[in-house]
Length: 278
Ligand SMILES: Nc1nc2c(ncn2[C@@H]2O[C@H](COP(=O)(O)OP(=O)(O)O)[C@@H](O)[C@H]2O)c(=O)[nH]1
Ligand SMILES: [Mg+2]
Image (tube, rainbow, N blue to C red; front, side):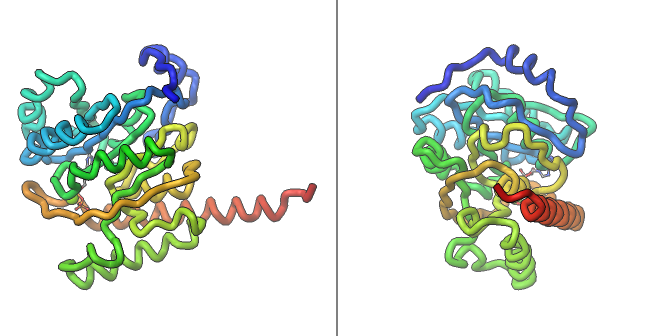
């Protein structure tokens, strides 16, 4: 069923009554949404790959029987991302570039892009061509067929770890293992750290997510109202330009998020135990 769209300006004003979000966490607007897919591409110094990527993304989304938007959210890279995108933006109003100033953080950039759209299906993918755009139609299809979440998974039957340095493989495996107790069996995906996924907006209504770090999907899995999901395997590509921004800070943010999620889980368990039986 197609939900009736409301003009974006009204949507914004209805959100104005919500409490001002802090810059450490950010919530989406209430679920007034249009049956449309919005793909957010966060960028930090990715001018070298953004033009070919957006061109490929548009070509793939043209195959999806839904209206779409492509939103590039750049954290003031000043590397010519605007120049690289200018010809596409000039000819295609479905593509937008949002530049955030004075703020950094991958999760926050994604939420910023999602807050700027009224699309019902919200996707995210990296800008460095490590996430193949050819998977977008399948992610969209998974949501069209009723799933709340579609995850593009790098770890499928262990295959995608081939060719990785053993230390990186061990760190990655351990980080995933640590998330196990946080998730019910039905939500235990092979790759809870993926940065390539599509989620139904209504599953995130009113939830304030962390803006720092790379692991928004994990927080959505633990705190979002996800009832059904589909995982789709893909092979993580190689960077064609620029450098990875993953590093010790990203690891620190991951541990902080884990600690928060474990705390929330034990508080919820305690509340359940203390609740009077009917
Ligand atoms: N807007 C924004 N994008 C970011 C930030 N950190 C990373 N990114 C983007 O997030 C995506 C994933 O980052 P990347 O460095 O490729 O991580 P890796 O694939 O784990 O090495 C890329 O498109 C980056 O440009 C940030 O602080 N702000
Ligand atoms: Mg990357």
